Amino acid sequence: MSLTFLLTTKIIIDNSSSDAPCVAYCPELDISSCGPTEEKAKQMLNETIEIVLTEAAKDGTLNKYLEEVGYTIKEKTITPPVVSYTPYFFPMPRYLQNNYQWAV
View 1 (cartoon, one colour):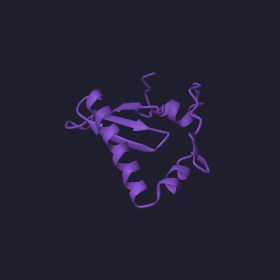
View 2: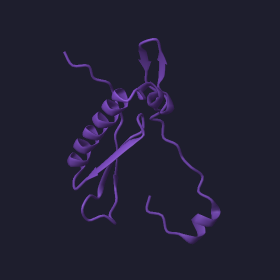
View 3: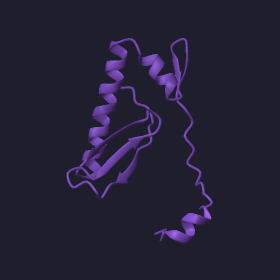
View 4: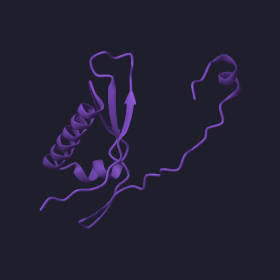
């Protein structure tokens, strides 16, 4: 039996990078990775998460790491942070409105 848990992946396209323009970011663990395609970036993110968690467990810092990124640990129960999916509309500062073109 395999244990899984829900994580969010945010994909960011960085057009300034020709080798790995797709960045996959996991806010619950504050970990990111990249790749030439979205699928490869997600695959690399999974591998990075596995390495970070495994190495933290090996060196005894897993609980500290998880608490630093928002998890709650009581005895042997780990509760993930709550991630909000509510849209947030940021009021654009006047300076930015007047001096830049925004593609929205």
